[in-house]
Length: 134
Length: 118
Image (cartoon, rainbow over all chains, first blue to last red; front, side, top):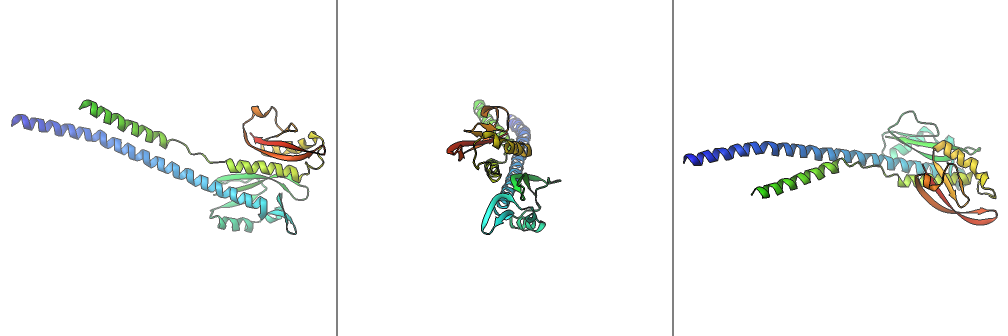
């Protein structure tokens, strides 16, 4: 009987001590999975924003702000007067963006920017069209 | 029994390690379509500037190639009429996009490979 209780105590002690590293491992595992999920979500959000900016820029250089002669459109030939704040605002709402900046001028500050190569006005000066957003 | 425990521990460790390594793998933005669009932009701008009208001298296209290079920092190569705005050949640059076009050069149709890189 004495021997039996002695063994039971040892096993309980053993179990208690083994639970601590197991718990630590599970906490570590949980944190790792959580971190992985967060970084993937962030990457997905950035890709989504980038894709939207690419769409907006493509629409702008192919149709939205191009020089027109009757029914003829001239892709990549930008009429600067069409790049108004209401034009940007319409696209911002359509693509569910928080901010949208479309201009031939260098943007001051924005979370993500892309550019397209265009010519502008009658002189056909080579310029960059910036599309930035958040 | 101890061997069995060691195997379980090893499997658990390998599983943990693979999860940790997977979590640190960075997912970069996919620029492929955008790069293709930029390459088409460059070609389109050269066209709009009248570079392919009556093209008989490859040097006539160089000022606009240089201008695009200055504005964007990109390297453009026209393989077929051997014209570029960057030093070195194809192998010296990280070319991201190439496309084939047909132009009239010296009153003859000529196929050129238009490449863009950094």
